Image: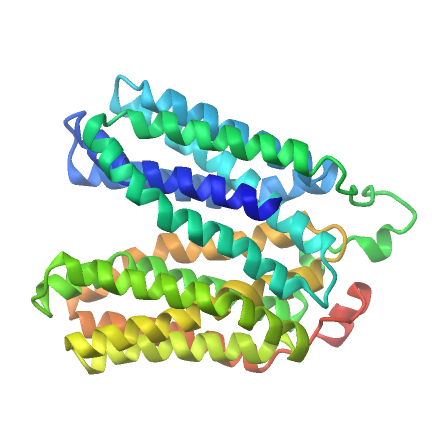
Length: 389
């Protein structure tokens, strides 16, 4: 059910994403203001995630999930009716809060209800729903935006309504987490302070930040410019590279999840960081179309591994109730998504694309070191984790 919800949400976002910058530009604002509309969603996700985690700990995931989807749906429909830039900006920010509510509660529910033996594979299936939806959405959104620049916002609201209905109906029998003050709270609840004392959890945070930095800061932001300006190839090469990343990412999700479940999270995290870092190094060292294609293939494999193993670690640590623990994990990823494009772009402007790629590889190498020093916490009792680190 959660994978179906993820697919519906991702399809809608893929439909509306191409329309947002064009719609904002229609209000006569500059490129920086257009960028602010795009950043407002991610910034509000980042700012609200920890508060969302506390709400989840208090009232449970299902209510927060459905409410979050409703907020994004209503704000999207109203954004399509915007008559000013300020209205669009505020409504996209509100959508970011709803997105944080959905994503933290969905991941928390998934990690809580699936046992450690299958947790990474479950995360892979869930991420596969997002990936498939993300691939499908833009194919619909482009032609739709050409017909009407406002139409994608309403279609997005419709796909969210489908997602909310699936969640309300399909998840109605999902067991609730223990109450915060129940008799088994000592073993069921893991707070953020306790989780931060666990080396594996800290490694998962850094890995998620590094993966988002590489994906948003390099692949989505710098790679298209690198292909056009340095490799002197057309946008078709950009699309081909992105397609290779998506295909290899999808292919590796379930195998990586199986390895993480059967052999441990650490080797998958380390391999994912090293492979993604190697892809960045390849872009820097071999600025050639062949090097670019190989780098995108390698990055797709590494990123797929990082889509499953770090989240599984969070589930191992969070236990039956750990909304803030899951929220902090999402914040790490959002932090990478926000800072990656800015830092990598500044490095490329100040020095070169190669420096930006090497620096991103360094971030991923640091994450690999952190993961290598972590221990396997798949079957460790939550209350004992902080004692062993």
